[in-house]
Length: 488
Image (cartoon, helix red, strand yellow):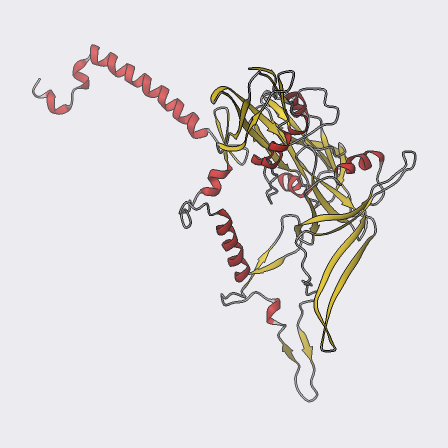
């Protein structure tokens, strides 16, 4: 058995090389996910008339990847979009050889370079290099760190009519992992304690050499009262955000199922479908090319009020003429978890109601208690909460928190009796990583001042020990305890 072609050590899922084997006998393949030692494929292959076996691993590998979107303001690891696999080959029941390779959930059309060089120089997005954002728009950049590197931000602040550049380090990324970097305008402004005119994001290696292109963001006001923020997982494995500011319409479809019993008609079920039709607004040439990545995406979100909600497209119109600008797309979507219920906000203002009664003094009626935090803890007790991308407050209840925690416990139970066993510092443990000899917390180096002091103390201690040995040989009586002087 000879291996004629195999996947590269680092490969893109959409461009992974086939496994081609020259063999005169049947070959068995066992494909293992290295992180969990789980077998995801086990199959036997018979050579063709040319004694060749051609194995395409794309379909077997695709279900092993997932993107995790977190409400975080610091870079966090994307464990699910880069995976390490082991392919074991067997002939006559005995293992002949094994291959190890890492795959990133990405694909490039007419790919003509190595995955390592592409990932080193590019963020996992096709969005325009210069992008307009609002203060609260959720913005992310995903990057696969082939080696240890640093996320840099150069923010330009207007000071007395002149732009002054301030450089920030957003995080240190450990090599061999994929990372998602929140780059929302509000996050950068918080780091600066100022509102920048624009800011650039790029990756440097540990020697200070820039590796990627520069991604620039600049702030604008909302483009229309109907502006909607849409997020989607792109074909490079990252997540993108675009602002659809065109006209919007709502479509409600109802199918009335009627049964007639003894001359009386009854609606026994009404099938309700609520859909939303949205126009992207006018796009320039670069934007309309980029948004072609949106429609084939299998995971899409829309930002509603203060949270992200999963959506699915039911229809789309993606046509344009090359010579016509500006242009735009329209699409129809519905919520992935849609149910025929309503959840309308209470928009009445909270104020005191003064009523004047004839022949009596004015008195004050208290507002409704539901508009204020409850003072007694119960299932209906209200707590203030806020999304990191919102500028307004919402409420949740003890009952909602209890239901959420219960679902999380059930989802995380692995039938190992671990329910109830917790670590007080599990959040800190999850945030720790390592780059070289440095320990990182949320991609930031932990202060090493105490370690430096310890090294200095160790060196001084060694010098003291040498001095003590010298004195012991030269002046042995000086080092004797006082209690022994009398004896001597």
